Length: 127
Image (tube, rainbow, N blue to C red):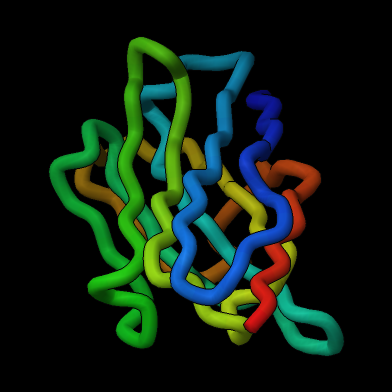
């Protein structure tokens, strides 16, 4: 098993930047594909970004490309979400997720593909 704890959320103004962190504990972190999802009030959990084992491949939701970046530091067992030029519509609880994979190039965009989740961190963006 792996335990995930998100941090870095908070209150921001439109145009600000935030960096979310998600350190993982437990099994070999580098063997996990990682992802970030956002859930706004009253909405389903939506894909934000995903990254492969060694960070060689990433995928960001089309609507967020150019503003959000996912990265990971395997020696620190941590995945990050850099959020730039924040907008009020980015307001959501952001969750990181982990999924063990046998293939280093695995990358998952569906929340159903992930077995392990953090508790979430709230990001609120005001005008």
